[in-house]
Image 1 (tube, rainbow, N blue to C red):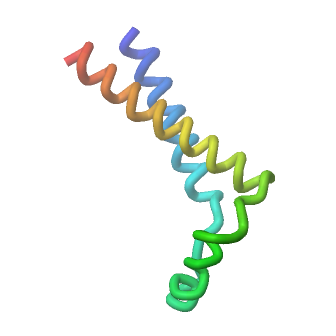
Image 2 (image 1 turned 45 degrees about the horizontal axis):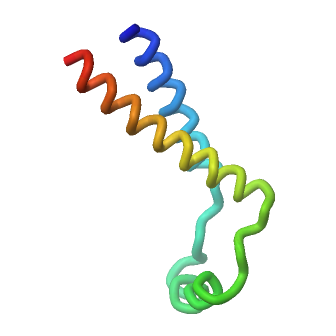
Length: 77
């Protein structure tokens, strides 16, 4: 059982790393942080394409990673 959970944790961590690295950056340096903040707050929604899928995959992989880590530590320590 412990080996199975460790394999799932390794897969979740690889998926998490890959999904974070595949996402594009939010700003274009200092000018993007000043001018781009209002657009993100009041305007454009995220596109429902590639970036939205990556955001969902990242969130699911992060939750799975945290839950599996806590389960492994609490049950098998």
